[in-house]
Length: 240
Image (cartoon, rainbow, N blue to C red):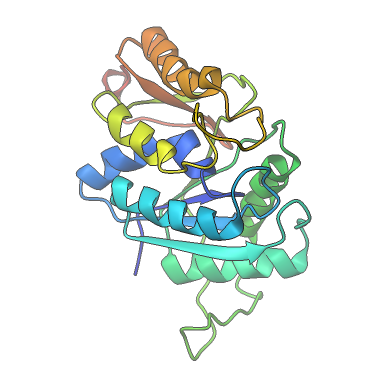
């Protein structure tokens, strides 16, 4: 299946938190969207890999994306090396996305920055003809493919975005997909250990960050991204 957008996160819930409303909006616009999780989040303090699998499935249904795949890289310990790059290249060539959205370029969790650079490097390498790959669902060498654009969502750190997407009308769906991760986020009845993302303040911050960015760009809610190259428009009137 050829995708319009492939959203990639180091852990299940990264994509929902970072770009869930954008994905929901593009699904509503008829775009084909896929999600890849690099790990199962098995080192997470709360919940288990099995509960995260179930939560990720439920979150994907809420967003309405067309597919979700887990690479089963080692949580906390995957690296940006040839072996991991080749696995991502296979996925990029298989799904041929026009746009890739991935982790923040720098963040509190070490996997976020690693995942960000791994995906960026794989997107470049995927366009090189002399790198030969075969996807498990194909019987021949894959054709090279390089996405037209790579965007990085913003996570724990307040990185200033280069680009904002108006997601007004889609925050309810985003929040529902985030809260599908019942073991990870605020639950006053949970007896699991507290973590930086399990507080009510964190859950509230997902909304107020989008609302504040919306204020800055003149809309109700927005999600922010950093970009790897200069963005262009056909006309100044395309800008809001």
